[in-house]
Each structure stands twice: as C-alpha cells, then as structure tokens.
Image 1: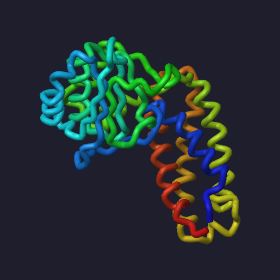
Image 2 (image 1 turned 45 degrees about the vertical axis):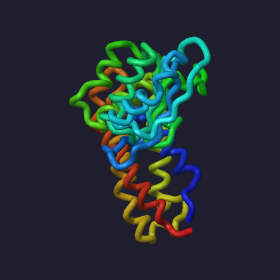
Image 3 (image 1 turned 90 degrees about the horizontal axis):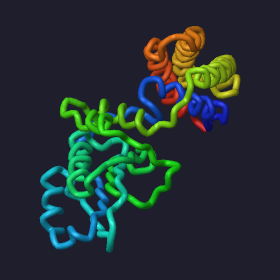
Length: 251
C-alpha cells in the first residue's frame, strides 16, 4: 500500500519541528567511506599552479577535485556541502576556500547537493538559496572538536530560513490532528491497514509523536525555544520510526 498524501504532508510539516533542534533535513551520520566530488572555481591567477593546488586538495582529503578558472575577477565567496560530508573534509574545504578565494561569506544549503558533494565558489545558484555567514559562525564551523553530526546540525541551522515559534506551533497542531487521524484509521487512511504487522508496529510511534507534539504546543510561545528541544527531538524520532514501518506496507 502506498503512503497516503496525508502521511506525506504530516512528515513535511514535521520538518518545521526539526528547526528547533537542527534545521531542515535529516541528521547526518558520520561518513568517511566516500571521497565525494569537489567542484572548485578559482581566480585565473592560480591557473599556473593548478597541479600543486590539486595535490594540496588531495592531501586534505579532497582528492576527487574538479577545478575551473575565471578569466577575470574573483569567484563567488561561497561554499556548499552535501549532508554527509565529513566534518574533517568540510573543515578542509572551508580552509582552502579561505586560502584561495580570500573569503567565505555565503553558505549553500545541503539539500542542493548529493550527500558527499562539496562546492567552492559556485555561480550556479541565486540569492534565494544563499545564506550569509559571519566570521564567528564560520569559526564555529571550523571547530576541530566538532563531530560530523555536530557540524551538520550547525550548518543546517545557518542555512535554514528563520521561522517563529508561533508558526511552528500552528504546524504542530496540524500535525497532531493528521497523526491522530492516521492512528484512528490504521495509519494509512485504511481501516484494514491496522491489521498488517507493519501497521500495528507503526501505531505506538505515531501515538508517541502525538504526545510529544502536544507537549510542544502546550508549552506556548512564551518559553525559551530550548525548553521545547527535548519533546521536539523525541517527536521527530517517533515519526521516523513510524515512517519505516508504514513504508513497508505492501501495495
């Protein structure tokens, strides 16, 4: 059985909850198995040093590097990271971007790229997906103690449009209603689905998501957002577990 539009809408709505703890997108697991592609744009002055630069990138763990040169001027001061780029490779990319392009002032969201992809000075995106980053935030991204997960939590937060707690709570209420409907109707809008093993397995997770979302809504918009972090995180985990079971239902 295919996942209903209501369930998909619920999962999308729940993405706003994730802003409280991490920002848009799934949390990334530390990955160090794939080198990934690295696309770099450099000023024309570096053309004569291309082999040495490629070697430097390779030594920094960015071996699958593809470079192009501008005929004149300076490349865009941006970087973009896929959601599974390791923290070590990400730090190296930022360091080399600062060295050769003099500045990093813009971050590009991870959802624009394949999981292990890195871009430096891309001109393929407009200001609708550009997020300014200041020196302090850039310094935090380069913290050597950051794990891959911690790096991407901060990166997502820096590349997510701001949203008010009130707006989040309105979406939470909508999610609670949809999730309650799913539980009442077998999780899929089909009363017979609850008899399926996967449907039964999904129900407790949906109920837990409802309970945690109600906690967030009850706290109101007067509390510090940090107070809602724990229930929001638990609700997100519960929805993910429910999604695993519901996606296994036979068509």
